[in-house]
Length: 204
Image (cartoon, rainbow, N blue to C red; front, side, top):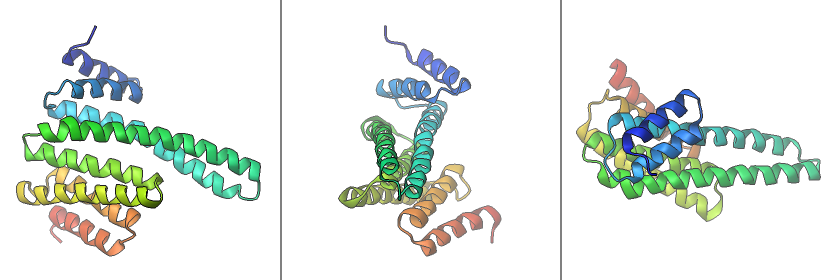
């Protein structure tokens, strides 16, 4: 039997309480695939679920990568580390691709409010950024440019349609500045974005 939307949302909330974020994400994915525009509450549940699901893999990936670098002298250990890192990478990529598909197929096309559009485009920028953290070669360039494009589009809309102090606009500016700093190695651009955030919050 297929669950109706309110049951799926309830299930997602239960899963969140139990800190079972994979279950939470699966429930909110099913809600999204029903094709209706999400309410703010549903949108936040989806975002929290996937942030935790992908966050766990991102931190595992960092830990294993640093262990891998420390075991350079021991070929057997290094090989084991590499294989394990690649397994985590594959999981991380699957999660990001799931989210990006939901965004492109349902969430962005169905967004009627500019606030939602900015939220989802920011999310698209975030998940391409997570992909770019583990990508290499041509794949890296593609994910980086897709991330930048999504952030930029969100940024343009937010400047036109939202107050400078709007939490979603601020969150976008901060994540975009992280992208410039960590992914494009461009601290100047990152700083100027962070300064606009400070200015809109504190007036200096």
